[in-house]
Image (cartoon, rainbow, N blue to C red; front, side, top):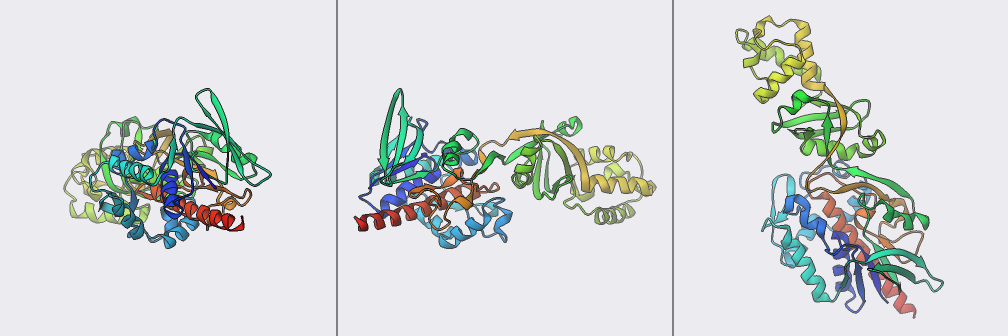
Length: 417
C-alpha cells in the first residue's frame, strides 16, 4: 500500500506527517512541482506566518469563511483551535496570540514553522520529490491510481493505492483540468483577499492615512464589510477592504473587478444617525469653522477632503451650515462613492476563491465521491477565508481529515487482502 500527495504546501505536508504517524509503515510520497516545498507558508503573514486563529472572537463561522463555512464548522468541532495549537507546540513551535485571536510562532519567523514540518517529515520517513510535475492520474482496473509525472525530460508512471490532491489555486488554473475530467464539479478559480484600485486621485494623495473602523459595500449588491481601512497610492486596502474582497470575490471577478465602492468613513452606513451626530457636534461648536472641528475623530487631511466632496466650505462657521450642506456631508460620511478600477495584490496573501466543489467530496474523509482512493485537501478545494490565519487553518484541518480518511481506507483495504 502507498499514498501519493500532490503538492508540498501546508495541507500536503501536514497530511503526510499525520498519515505517517497513523501508519508508520505506509510509504508516503510528496510530489512538489517547484524546487521548494512550503514556499507559500514561508511568505505568508509578511514572513511571520499567521499559523491559525483562536476563533475566540468569531461568533459566526460564515463571517470568516465566505466559502466552506459548513465544512469548517464540522472540522473545528473535530479539531478545536486549542488542540491544533497544542499540536504545533508539541513539534517544537512555541506560539503567541495577538490581536483578534491571530496566532503566530513566538519567534515571529515563518522559518520556524517550515523547519519544524520539514524536520518531522524527514524524521518519520516521508519521501519528498521536488521539481516533479504531475501530468495526470488515471484509475486502473485493479482500483489503483496510476500517477504520471515529469522530472526534467523524464516521464514516469507509478501506481498508488491512494492519491491526495493538495495543489491548485489561481496560480495554476490548469491544475483543475484532471479532476474536472473525472467528473468533479469545479468552481472557476478567481482571486480573493486584495486591495481595490479606485479612480480617485484626490484620495490617493492621502496615501498612508488609516481609519480605524469603516463600513464598506459594493453598490447594487448585498456585499458588506467592516474594519480598518488604509488609503494607498492606488486606492484602498486594509483588513476591512480585504474582508470585502473575500465576500465579494466572485461578484467582483464576474464584473472584471469594476463597480462602485461605498465607504462609511464614520463607521456606520446610517445616514440619519450620522446627521444627528453632526447636528450635536456643530451646535456645540457653532462659532468655530467646520474645518477646525473634526467629526468622528477622522484624520484632519481626510476630513478636509470629505468637506470638499460634500461641497462644504471649510472656513464656514458650524452654525452657518444649511440643511442641504449638512445632508450632503452626512451622505459623504456614510456612503462616499468611488469607482472601482481594478484590484491590487495584498502582500503576503495568495488566496483563491473557487476549486473542487465540496459537494464532490465526503466531509468526513475528504475522499472523492466519484473516484475511490482520490482525496482532496487545502487550496484545491472551494474553501477560503478572510485574513487572520483562517486560510492556513483550513489547509491544516482538511489535511488532517484527509490523512485520517486515507488511514482508515488503507487499513480496511489491508484487512481484505
